Amino acid sequence: MIKAIIFDLDGTLCDTMPDLRTAMNAMLARLGYKTRSRADLIRFINNGAREFVRRSLPKEVQRVEFIIDSALGVYETEYAKCYCEKTKAYDGIKAMLMELKGRGYKLAVLSNKQDKFVKDIIDTVFGKGLFNIVQGQSNLPTKPNPESSLAIARALGAKPDKCLFLGDSDVDMETAKNAGMLSIGCAWGYREAEVLLGAGAERIAENPDAIVPLVDEIEGELARMREEARLAKKRK
Image 1 (tube, rainbow, N blue to C red):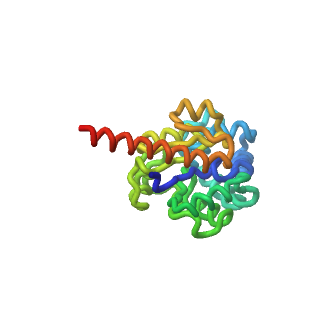
Image 2: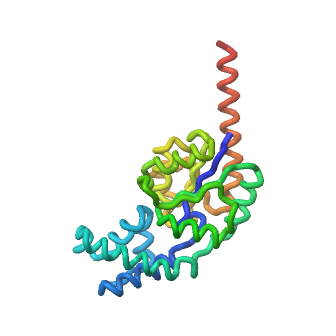
Image 3: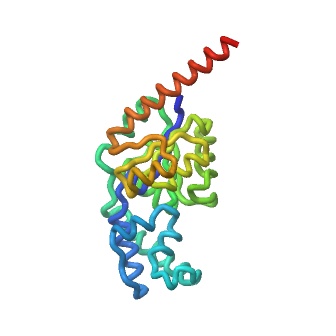
């Protein structure tokens, strides 16, 4: 059975894009660059703050590292001013999390966003105590490298194949695959279902209300596999 469920933050638990856009466009304006649309920034997100900044800058400076360093510092200053102003949980998320928590699943958050912002957003939006672990960008490699997700699984006492990873991006689906975890792609976020399936999503949830039924479906499938393995062993 599934022991732990790990969630991405941006585009999965919360719509963070309004505040991300405010901060990014403030940074771009301060540095004299053209601001970006929501659609632009959705394409650039998912690989950590530095890559988000790099991709948001004009192409001609995206490989100039000292400009990236400077821009990242400005962006973090601007994001610190607004990161919880408009960020909110998607409809149905809180009820879904409470149902899973009530069933005894251990819950975690793993994001490529800066750790201090991840923890503050989770505490502000959901309160303390709902999640067993909340982890942002740390000294470990960012997703889709599996090290952070595997570290969370160890801390929760769960084997990777007993963990379920939920996210809205190809990066999240690749993280699950790299870690040997089960996955559900969240199609209400910043990537389409086709992108999630192409990255290896085993199931797609069109909205948060679909998550608990999908978890039940996965649990049933795992139970059938265990029973088939038991019967096969008995026949030998």
